Every structure is written in structure tokens, then in C-alpha cells.
Length: 154
Image (cartoon, rainbow, N blue to C red):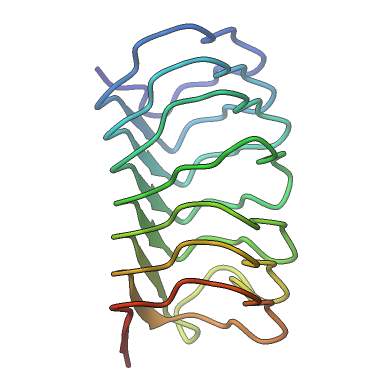
């Protein structure tokens, strides 16, 4: 199922099985995805302003060119095996989140965001077996982070 180029502002998609859905170039501003299954979903150039993710099930999503800075990710604990390409987490508190097996990439010369991961709090997060390819992690906090098996690529 695809939500490509859809204006879904304030739509209630809570308690839905959206596994594998594609949300590309859509406006999801104010949408509720609470208690929904988003495993394997794909998000590309999506407006997430005011979106509600509480108790949402994740794993294996694809987020490309998405700005998370207006999103409340409190309560999100598992983003394992997820791909983050050119996303903006700047200044967010992602402490304790499981990112194991995920991929973070950002290409500063081509990036649509300035900062990308700058100032992000990853304290207590699980980054084991992740791949980090580019991106700006300046002033990010990595206290008590699991970095076992991390691959850093240029």
C-alpha cells in the first residue's frame, strides 16, 4: 500500500497494521500512528510535524530525507534494523533507544539538513552492529552507549 504524495494531515492511523507501507513525499503533519505496526515501512521526504508515535511498533523501516526535530519520540524504544538516510535528529533525546543493526548515513555536501545528528543525545542507546556512513555527530552525547561491532565508513 502506498501513501505517495498524499496530504493526510491530522488523519487517525492509530491501531493500524501499516507494515511495509510506503509514505513518500506525503504530509503526515499531526497524524496519529499510536499503537500501529510500522515494521518495514518506507518514509521519503515526509513532513512529520506534530506526528504521534506513542507505542508504535518499529523495526526495519527506511527513513530518507525526513526531519524528526518536530517529533516527540519519547516512548520509542526500538528502531533496530532501520535505515536513516539524510535524516535530521538534531538536538533530539534518543537515550536508551535500540538502534542495533541500523544504518545511519548523511552526506554533508549533498545533505538537505545542516547538522543531521548534531547535539543528539544517544546516552544508553544500543548502537551495536550499526553502520555509520557520513553525517555530523558534533556535540552528540554517547554516554554508556553500546558500540560493539559498529562500522564507521567514509
